[in-house]
Image 1 (cartoon, rainbow, N blue to C red):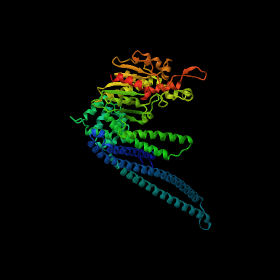
Image 2 (cartoon, rainbow, N blue to C red):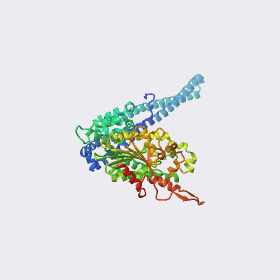
Image 3 (cartoon, one colour):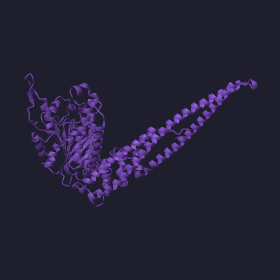
Length: 594
C-alpha cells in the first residue's frame, strides 16, 4: 500500500501482467464468438436439426450479446490496468527524481548554513574597523540559503502533486475495473475453488450456471477442462441423464447450453454420448480455426533471421494449412471428431453414425509413428472406413489419444543417442514402441476411452472389435489389462503384448500379417521380449499373406537377401484399403460379419 511519503509504491510489471491476462481472455472469447457464429450458420444441417436445431440456435443467439459484453468489459479492464501500470511507473520515476533533488537541495542548504555560521564567528569589526568584504560574503550566503529554501518548497509542492496524481490514478483504475460486474456467477470459479473441487462437483456447478456465464466460463478459466477430465465416466453418464427433459428424446435446454457454452469440456468428457461429443467438437474445430488464423498472421509478420528460420516457417505454415483443411471439413460436417486437442496430440475420429441399428463398434489403434498429419490426409482412416462403407450398421473410432511411439522424440528420446536417431535416421521416440512403461500408461488411457464409449446407449449393445496395427496391439492388450473388454481383437501385424497380459476367454484373437519388417524383428526375440501374436496360443493365425512385390532380392554380391523396402511396405500394407490388401480385408470381413 502506498503512502504520502512514498506515492510511487507498487508493482507496475505485476499490474501490466494483469492487463495482459485480461487481453488474452478477451482474445479467447473472440475466438469463441467465431465458434458460436459458425454454429448458428451450420444449424440448418440435418445433424443439427436432430439436436433440436431451433432451441439450439435460440440459445446461441441469446449467448452472443453477453459474450460481446464480457469482451468489452475485459478490454476496458485491460486498458485501465495498462494505463495504471504506466502511470504508477511514471510516478515512481518522478518520486525517485524528486527525492534525489530534495536530498541535493537539503545538502546544499546545510552547507550554506554552516558557511554562514563560520562567517559570523569570524566577525569583521564595527564602525571604522568594519570589513566590507565580510558583509558582502554574509549577504551572498544568506541569498543562497533563501534560494535553497525556495527550491525545497518547490520540491515539496511537486511531491504533493504526485500524491494527488496517485489518488487520481487509483480512482481512474477503479472506475475502469468496475466492468468486473459483467463476470456474473463465474466469480465463484476462483483458482482456489477450482483446486479443491472434485470433477463431479465441478460438473454439477456447471449445470447450474446461467447460460451466459456458462458460455464465457471456459474462455476465462481454461484450466476447468483438465479439472473436469478426471470425472468418472459412469458419474458423467448419470449427470448428463439427469439434465435430460423427462420423457423426451430431444436434448434439453440445459444440455444444449452445455454443448454451446462449454464445448471444450463436453467434447472431451468420457461418458457422454458420441453424437453429443461430435457436436461439441464441431464447435471446438471452429475455435481452433480462428487460432490457426492468428498463428498464420503472426508468422507472416515475424522477421526471418536466417535461412533456417525461413524453412522452419514454411514447414509450420504447411502444417497449419493441412490442419485448417481438415478442421474446415469438420466444421462443414464432413468429419466427425469424438476428441480433438492439437496441443496434446489427441484425436479420435468417428466413422459412421451411432443409432438403434448399430450392431458393430470398432476401435482402430494405429501403430508406431502415427501422428496428427495422418488424420489430416486421411491415410490412417481408410482401413476402418472400408468396413463402415460396406456395413452401415458399423461405427468405427480411429484412435490416437496422446503421443504414440515415434510421433515426437517421446519420453525415451533422451536415451536414443546419436546412433539411434542421427546415424540410422530413426526418430528417437521409436524406442517407446518397445517400452513396457509407455504401453502401461497408454493402455490406461485407452481403457478409459472404452469405458466411456460403452456407456453410450446407442453403442452399448454393439459387438466390440479392436483393430490393432503394429504397436497398436501393445496398446490394446495393455488396455485389456486395465479392464477394457472386446469381443474380438484383430492384430494387423501386431507388435507385442505386455508381460502381465492374459487373454480374455470371452474374446477371439486373430493375427493377419504379411512377411514384413516387424516379423523379421520379432524373430530376434527383442520385440516385447518375444511375447508376440504368432508366438501366442491365444491368437489364431494362418499363413503369411503375399504382398505385391517379392520379398527376396539380390545384393551387390549376387546373394539372395530380404528387400528392406518391401518388408516395410508389407508392414504398412496390412492396415490399408489398397487393392493389394483386398484378401486381408475380405478375410477379416468374413470373420466379423459371419
